[in-house]
Amino acid sequence: MLFFVLTTGKCNLNCKYCGGSFPEWRVPAVPTYELSLLKEFIENDAEPIVAFYGGEPLIQADVIRQVMNNIAARFVIQTNGTLWDMLEWDYWKRMDAVLLSIDGTEKTTDGYRGPGTYRKVVQAAKALKKHGYEGDLIARMAVSEMTDIYRDVLHRVLAYLTIYTGNWM
Image (cartoon, rainbow, N blue to C red; front, side, top):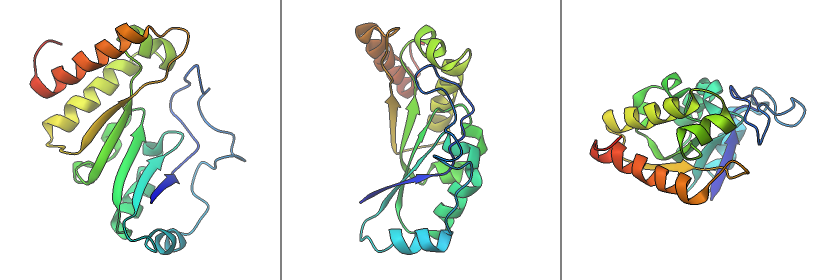
């Protein structure tokens, strides 16, 4: 079973389509449950997968470390990619999948997520590859009025090829 672990409702971005952080009453800034209860719940499953989610889950990198150090599971993270350096490489390498939010071209991504976001996400993808990440690296895309599906998806494909071959971009 796939378990979504919300590490925080806070986000370091203020994207046009979601507006940034969740209200505290909806998703707390820090988990309000005991790690031991989470462990017991998840480990009742024979093949658990834990997906770290937020807000921006890396804001609470300590929560990610605690879960990964104490719960036997496969791990996935959905992140905007801008805080990738908050987590040490040995944790990244234990992730089965990393989902990075990037909406297409630099203009499209920065238009939705804020100036400089695109470059930080590409930097994160390149750093993961450079440091030997072998899991699935997945680009997550939000689509709205500024999106040109053909252009932005094609750009993501070419960017992916660049990261994995070192050519073009």
